Image (cartoon, rainbow, N blue to C red; front, side):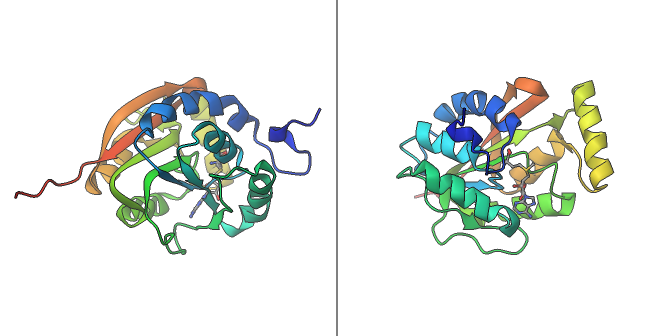
Length: 210
Ligand SMILES: C[S@@+](CC[C@H](N)C(=O)[O-])C[C@H]1O[C@@H](n2cnc3c(N)ncnc32)[C@H](O)[C@@H]1O
């Protein structure tokens, strides 16, 4: 049977199907006060469709690099959700930010794909991409104290590095530091299935004296 998630003519990620409900459970609270979420690296669009459908108070703006855009746009078109507009091209290295800054930012399984200098660049652009009081949620595998958190993550890291030596599971301490440098403070570090994490940060805005 063809389910909406599994159109045979569109790219499909089983991992997205497995992790979308646990992620949604956290996003329901984390994005309560948000109105617009910008997603970086939306991939197949399965997350975007699931989260837009189940978080109707949000306008979910999917984005990705040009190579993923046509299939992503097609999945989003078929979903026909009022709060899920056409995806935008956004390569974090080269494309400008959408005109309207979002107050939520979500990205899944991207930091281990981006070379570390690109990860640094992504974080350096956070304040351009988001408005004050923004919430940032990052899903994926992370190392703690420079150690893999499971043998499967260690094997995954090896397979990434065999594809491209610049890919690899990132250290949470380094990610927290990059976020902190942009004023984003870790609020929640949630365990997810399959040794993944969902990191929720809030922008620590400055209160100006009257
Ligand atoms: C493993 S896929 C994850 C896709 C989807 N978020 C998921 O969880 O299934 C990695 C994603 O990172 C995106 N990505 C890698 N480098 C990027 C860059 N420089 N700018 C924007 N997205 C990037 C890819 O285009 C791709 O969509």
